Amino acid sequence: MPHLSPMTWLIAPILFCSFMLPMIIATLWWTQTPIFPEPLSSSPKITLNNWNWS
Image (cartoon, rainbow, N blue to C red; front, top):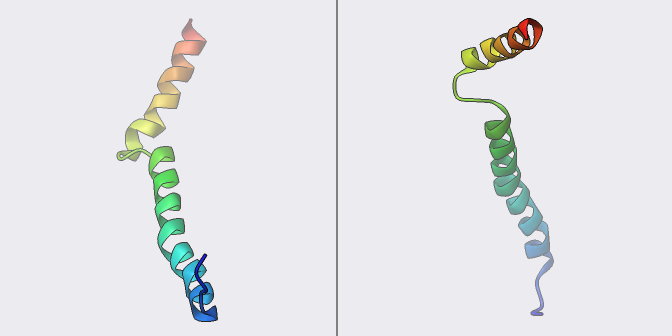
């Protein structure tokens, strides 16, 4: 384990948070929200109608 200066310990978490957290949030947001929002709003209605009619 090499000796690191306090500046690296100060900068490393800031760089990690500023680069990794937006990527994680973007991937979570991308997986939860589809590209087109209109099929998302219409698909629960279709599934609810299928459940109701069946």
